[in-house]
Each structure stands twice: as C-alpha cells, then as structure tokens.
Figure 1 (cartoon, rainbow, N blue to C red):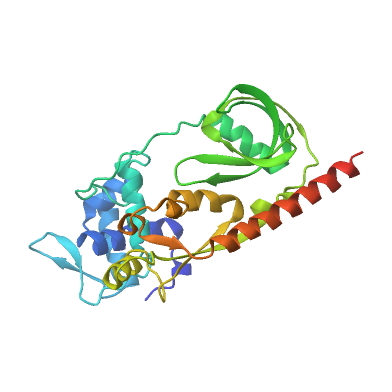
Figure 2: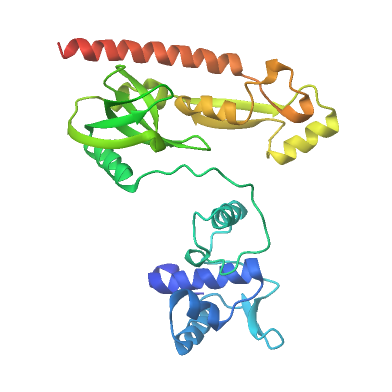
Length: 301
C-alpha cells in the first residue's frame, strides 16, 4: 500500500473521488474522473490502476455493471467517511447554496429539504468586515434596526451563525458595548480607522457554556428512548458546548425557552436541565464585561 505522503495532491483528490463514489454510490468508472477533473480517458484509466496499486483489493471491475465496484473488504484509505458531511452537502445542493458539480455527488439522490429563507449578504460588505476583523479597524456602517436605519461605528472581531442568519460580533461605539449585528441588515459600509478596542474584553463571547439537554421529563420511557436516539444522547444527556453569546440563539432555536408555556411534551421533546446555571454564568459574564469596559474607557481618559 502506497504512503499517502508519496502521492501528489492532485492524484490524492482523484483517489478520494474514487472512494467516495465507490462507497456512497457503489460504483466508479472512468467517465466519473473525466467529467469531474477534466482528464483524458487514458489518464482516468491510469488513475484507476494507480488507485488499485495504492489500495489493493478495495475495488474490482464488474463486467456486468461496466464499472468498478467496492469489494467486500473495501476500506477507504483516502476518504474520511462522514454521514454528517454527506447530508450537509446534500442539503446545500438542494437549497441551491452549492452546485452539485462542485461536490463529489455528480447527480444527488432523490431527496427533498425544507425551504429556507434566503438572507442576502452583499459580498463587498462581507469583504470589508473581514478586513476590519483582520486589521482591527472601526468601520462606519449604516444599519437597519427594527426601529430605524442610522450610521454607527463598529469594531468587528468575529462572525457568528445562529442557525438562520449570519451576524458579525462587534464593539458598538454608540452603545459602548459588544453586540451582534445581522449581516443582511448592514445597508452600507463607509470609512474605516484604526481601533484600540480589545476583543478579549468581550467576555460574553469568550465565555463557553455547556448546555445540558435531556428528553422532556414528562415523556414516557419509550418516548425518552426515541429522543435519546434522535439526538445521540449519552447516558440520557446531550451536552452542547457553545459560546455564551450564541447560547441564547441555541436555546431559542431548540424551543428550550418555551417549557414554561406548557408546550405539550410530545412537541417540546427536549429539556434544558441547567437553565439556572446558564443564566448565572450569563449574569457573571456581563458584569465582568461591564467592569472591563469601564476600566478601558477610564484608561483612555
């Protein structure tokens, strides 16, 4: 078996496609390599021979299928198997975020996904914010809040996704605090200037919190078992490690804040067991952040 380090990168990519198609589709032939990489038929044939030398016994030619198929002892040597990665890519293809030709799929299998609401972000706006993050600069943005649109200075330091929308985490010069700004609400980006805002003072962002999720206590034992399987719980608990700044979105997205509304347990399904602990961590983090911000403002005179 060949050492991966001895195989050039381009050939490794073609070997990865061979294993992906063999594992997920059950077949691979020369045309797959020709179409995906634009190589000639002789080169595609040579790649398949080279793969068989690098991973002997993994694939074999099936004259009926007129393609190479995985053997019973097939074990990928160049592909990192991941069902999650497969399904995430399939979702991206079906939602139009990624063309199928940019993946190993070729033609995706019959499938459907729930329609998503597009949140349009201007490419130049994102580029400018990324530059500001890299060089720690304050930028003037026109931001559409729920009440009005106005200009304000922000010092972005990170991007964040809440499951529905992309945000930029930034210091707000108007509110004198670190806040989330929805990217799609930034109408324009203006001048920038150097900033001495320290992102480490964003304690709410830098604090990690463990969200401990269990099946809803009111469910029957069989129902709890089903929920444990759905969420991959270990010993009846799923621990989600999140930045404190994002925990609010996680809790709302999973409806973990609606328990007190007497949602039927069959609909609620899951329950946050350490809500009080998370709230206390949040209070302490906000208090520490306010103290750091006051000290920073005082040092600037």
